[in-house]
Image 1 (cartoon, rainbow, N blue to C red):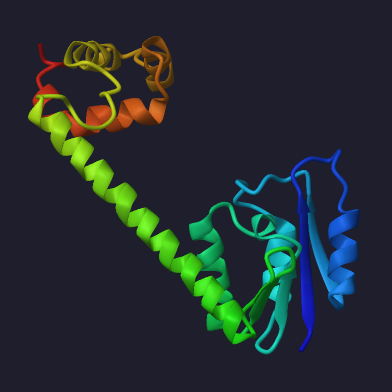
Image 2: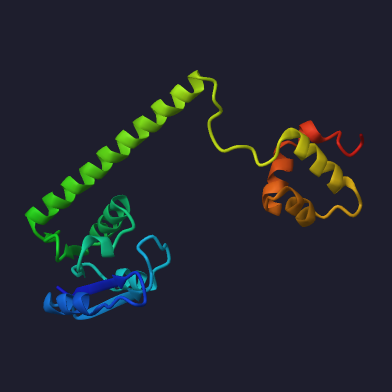
Length: 195
């Protein structure tokens, strides 16, 4: 079984030494790293390389769980994707090793807890939305423009010199947002230019 290590630190001032020593001691023949990248970053070159280097029968090893995933859900999805490819996973600090029955059990318990947490959050969100609707509150993001602002923006754009970027800047929104808002309300605002 080939062991592939992955180490990450969030800032350039932090050091990888402790993680690298632990991964080497765990028998990792190849170690990929990310430096100065937080766990919330979607684009982690070192992690992508580590995942690509791991093949069926191999094991991906990390020093601690939080080095791998942005969240528990992300971690579970990553480890499940590895499992689907026949790649085992090991976290040294938490002593989780999916090549053992105890490690798989621990990981499945974590996955069940994450699923439970997602369900609870979803239920609370739905209950909160229903309560807000019952009180007559609007749910969701506020509209980018009021109907009066939308009408004024449409009139400015009807002018031959109307520039989408300039009009959007005047209302403090992105040009794409202005284009989307006007497109969504095209039928109701269709008479603006002829008025």
